[in-house]
Amino acid sequence: MTWIEITALIVSGILVGFINTLAGGGSIVSLSILMFLGLPANIANGTNRIAILGQTLTGVASFKQQKVLDFRKGIILAIPAIIGSLVGAWIAVDINEEVFEIAVAVIMLFMLFFILYKPDKLLYGRKELIEKKTGFTQILIFFLIGVYGGFIHVGVGYFLLAGIVIGAGYDLVKANAIKVLIVLLYTPFTLIIFILDKQVNWKYGLVLTIGTFIGAFVASRLAVSKGVNFVRWVIVIVILLTSAHLFGIFDIKDIFSSL
Image (cartoon, rainbow, N blue to C red; front, top):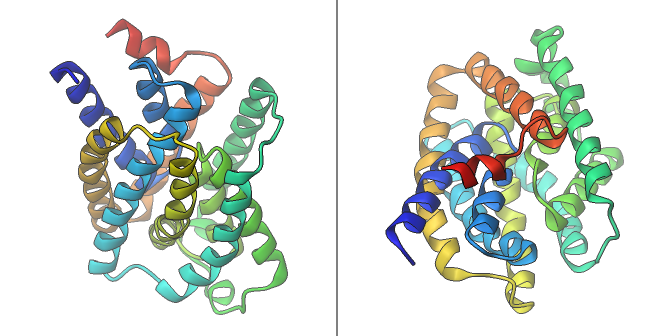
């Protein structure tokens, strides 16, 4: 591995860890750099799980230290997500990639509307929802999110944030903390499946993880110190950029290849 490859992986890892901890969609960057460095898509997908595990471990530790993480609720919502992630990682799904990417972009823009329209109802928490017992609908939603996260993962943070903010009533800072915990809890299971299928490049994955440690730590600190409005605008910017990529307005891979 050359120093250029090491530098590219660490720098992109910092960006990915930051984006994924505050919003979601950072895996587009990590998957792009891994494939640009020569890994097949399936190996890149498996290798990326090492970095995801590293960044979520860092994020959870930091959010816990800052006392904004609701462990009990996070674990309750993580259980169906874990089961779903196993299903998603094991089952081969026939997906038209272009149609799927457009669908994800539309959903992200739909979430953007809710973030910008009457944010007080969605950004600052709703106590009645937080105290409400977890029902079947929530369990089903997080199971399906887990299936998606286990199979593809890219953009799963947006689905989790939507479920936690809109469905469970948490503000964006606390929702981010729970989101990171859920991903941390289901990622080891999916990583094991990719390891068993020999779809993990440990060398690239561990170097990428170094960067995600840094990005996740910085993002978790900023989320708490700057508050929900900071998180809100980071999400808005990331959604716009990611949607532009998914709609084909520009290609992140092309950006890397031109560097």
